Length: 293
Picture 1 (cartoon, one colour):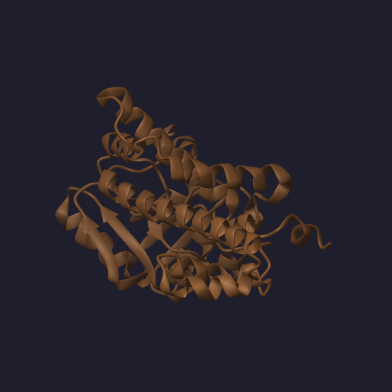
Picture 2: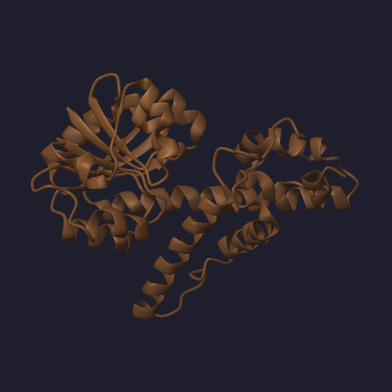
């Protein structure tokens, strides 16, 4: 297949690398330097999105935000008629509805996981469209990205977007829970390592295992797998989704996402301190560790 791949940031590059050996790949990124790994692997590099999609059998986008999708894909009417558009960008359910209405071949394909699973082809992947034959076709195409048990076809881009936001809500809230557990442990005179060990039999075991290396200082948050900027952006999509529903249906207990807002406050504090491009584990590190004191 001839595939146009738009957006070769950290995640986009890893996804595109899984396709390059079996398909003819043309890539584009706003910052051309970020296409270097793919060019070295044999991809053609386009000077603009229109050049990338010319003659493509599939268009894949992996952009930072819904607004970037609108600017790059929707506003210029970029996707050729009848060419499937596979969008891996994290978007809100309402965005997915908008994109599907604008481009009949839109398939929402958000991925769940960070750079490690992306490199190993073991991500969770949602494939969302009401067009069942197209869904099956796209599931086959993106299978190299996915853990087979976590490759899920759903009947709309909206549902795929919801699944991705649920996954990232769980990640943000559990990281905030770990942050508070570490604070409680320190207040009680327990070391971070002891706290991590005590959490092994609790509901925070998964996040403690995942982020333990960052807490111990075994891994730097610089150049991390999932940046504070990115998960904060996703948190705002979640909050906007709920606020839009509340405008229609009125208040209900917990619907203002207080736990997520707590996590977002921690993320925003780190972003304001200049750590937005660090792994979001930055919320688990003490200021002295950031500054090297």
